[in-house]
Figure 1 (cartoon, rainbow, N blue to C red):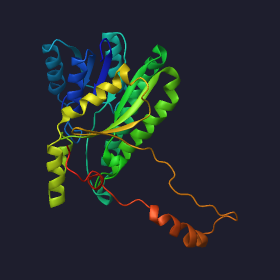
Figure 2 (figure 1 turned 120 degrees about the horizontal axis):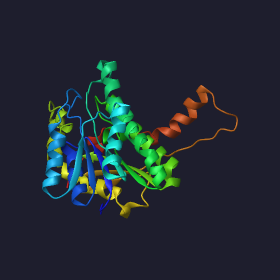
Figure 3 (figure 1 turned 90 degrees about the horizontal axis):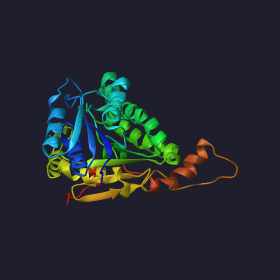
Figure 4 (figure 1 turned 30 degrees about the vertical axis):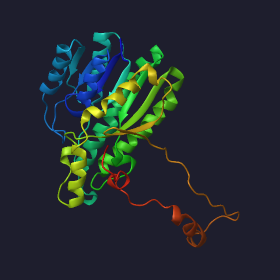
Length: 301
């Protein structure tokens, strides 16, 4: 499905990104395997994971090259796209998958933890996407696949930085889709459920937490790759601005925020009339303080 296409996958040294890179190569793509090789908290560097994926692709008869830049650095992000164009002549798809985690309950979150998580997941995805955007515009085609999270779409405890960044990714993707559709460029999101290095940081202190971890362990990273590859292909040429979710063998389409109730008062509102009329009318439609485990409460199938 990706014959003759050039695909960039960030965070492709391990986990979900690795599986996407391998499948993209098997489907005919020339792949840029980007991975800084840091820890789950974003510390350190290691070239071995990206090199290992490139070697695995080459051993299977595919074509790939490694890039070790940090996407949180604009110059590093640009080097990923530059490597694709310089070595393969073009760029057809960008899969923004790289990520880090520094979970903290909100009142204990440091400025550094907030900044670093947002800088990778939101700024980094922007830097890579912006570097590719002009190439896409000039060639009149291109595809972005951005990885979001149910932590942003629904919510989770102790993940304010990660949740904010991942919901920001959804908004950025929609804006890219709106701005660049005229140039034949598409932008979509995937929220994955998979047992990966980031998932392995989840706490297991309570029965509910242990149940959640057990569910995640049953969901392998390779289950995510087929949808990402499809969205990079011409078979999804009419798919733009959407939010998908993959949970083992289940695929979901998420809604976008839209008004669900309205109330009109011809003479306008005061704090008192809002309390007397608006609140009672709207309360039945208020959203619960759900976390993703509440919404996806059944075992993955």
